Length: 237
Image (cartoon, rainbow, N blue to C red; front, side, top):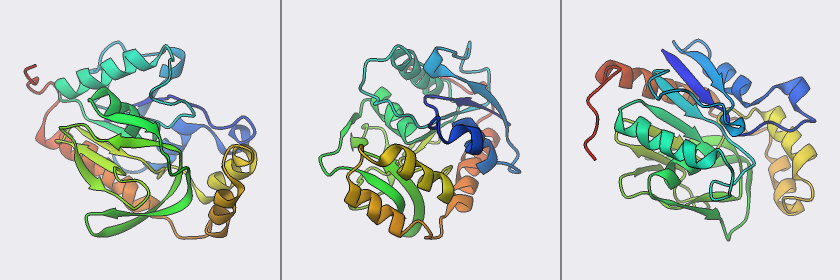
C-alpha cells in the first residue's frame, strides 16, 4: 500500500544530519508493515496532484501552528476535506492531528496549561500507551464528527478517529528517546520552561510504546484498504 507523507515541518538543523528528517522517522517507524512511501514537501507547496495519487496519507508534525498564516495551510485543509470525502485514509501526527481537526471544524490553540514534553502516558480506551510528546498547541474543541479515542489530564483530545477515514494522534510515536533528548537540548532551552524540560529529561528512559502504535497506524491503513477499496463511493455533501 502506497502512503504519501505530507511533510509540514523539518527536524532541527542541528539534529537532521545525524538523525534524519520527519519522513525518515515515519518510514523507519512503519518499516516491515506492508507499506511503501512517497514524500511531498507541502510546507514548500509541493502538493500531490490528487488525493488519489496514493492509497493513504500521513501528515507530519511541524513547528508551525495550524492557526497561523502560512501559504500551505489553506490548500492542506482542502486536501484533508477532499480525502475524507473521497474515502482515502489519512493519519495525522501532532501538527497533522491539529490541522485535520481544524480542517474538519474543530479548534486548535496554544494550551493555557503550557507544554507537554517527553515520555507521556495516554489512555487509549483503558489501555495505557506511553509516547514522546512535544507540543504546546492542542485540539481544544474536537470536530463534531470526530470520536475521542485517547486522552489524559493534560490533553483531552489526544487521539481522534473520524469514521474509518482518518486517525490522528497528538504525541509522536516517530520520536525516539535520542531525538527527544536532542530536541530538549537543541530546541527546548529558552522556548520551553526549564522545569518542564528537566522533568522530561528525568523520564527519558521510560519505555515507549512506539512499536504497538506503529502497528495501530499500519492496521488503520491496511484494514481500510481491505474494507473500503480505492475509489470508494464519495460522501455526499
